[in-house]
Structure formats: C-alpha cells, structure tokens
Amino acid sequence: MENFRAALAAIEEMKRDGVIAEYAIGGAMAMIFWAEPVATFDLDVFAVLPSRGLLVSLEPIYRWAKEHGYGERAEHIDMGGVPVQVIPAHTALTEEAITTAAVRDYEGVSVRVIRPEYLAAMALEGSARTAKRMQRVAVMLESGTVERDLLEGLARKYNLRLPDLS
Image (cartoon, rainbow, N blue to C red; front, top):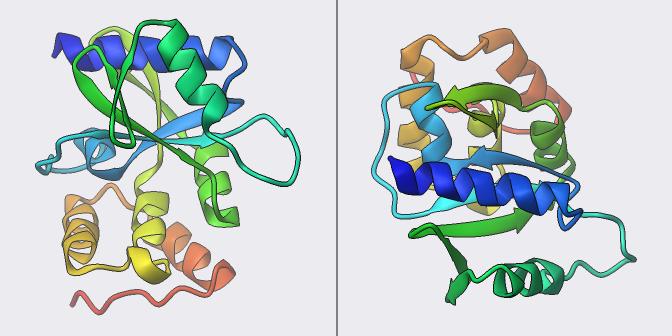
C-alpha cells in the first residue's frame, strides 16, 4: 500500500522537523500490526507535541502540512492520499502509550505503533468506550497478542473497567 508508506514517511518528516516531539499510530490502522485488520478510512496519529505553553494548538501541524503541499479535509491532512488525523496526547494514558510504542516494519518503513494493551486501555477510557471499540478490544484479546497482566495493570493504574469478555 504505497499511499500508507507515503503517509508514514510524511509523519516521520514532521517529527524530524520538530512539529511533533513523538508519535505512534493508533486506532484501527494500528490493529493491522497486532490482530485482524478492521475497516477504517483514516490513519490516527497520536502525538506528543513540543511544549509551547498551556494551550494546545494544532496550528503548527496544519501550517507544516500546507508548507509541504498536503491538503486538508475537515480535521484530516491528506498525506499521499491517506486522510491522517493528528491527535495530541490528551491523557496520561495516551502519552504513556505513545512513549512505550513498539517500532514495527511496514514494507521496509519503520513505524511507531501503539502496543495492543494500550490500544485496548485507550478504548476503555470514558467517551472512547463505544460498542465498536469494545469489539476491537475483543478481537485483540482473542488474537493472543495482548499481555493480559499489562492490560490489567493499566486498568488499575488508570481506573478503567475491563469488559467481561468471557
């Protein structure tokens, strides 16, 4: 998938240029590295932004994208034909998920991917806890790639309720 490779290269360039401090692929696209893929139309990139004060602004990201010839579609940046949504780390769990991301190979391109335990834990947070995401958690647990002890530890640490998937 050449478009996905182009998007990953653009994200790495954004990091090298200092627009984002660190990133990791999350959401449904991250599942291709851990379990059965699920349908999605965009690439979620969770990012730790350089510290620039109390308010979080995505303006530097959109400015960088425009300067590099990437168009916008609503909240997405079109990178190589792939709609990319950059999501700032908005909780301690999300920041930990980014900093502990695994480095995986995608057709010769290194990519940082949120580990399956963190993907599951993030799906259990507040408004993120939807039926669709609970199905994804079930798929990841069934895949055998989730370290159950780590997920249970994250649930305790971040006060999350694990679903009854027995």
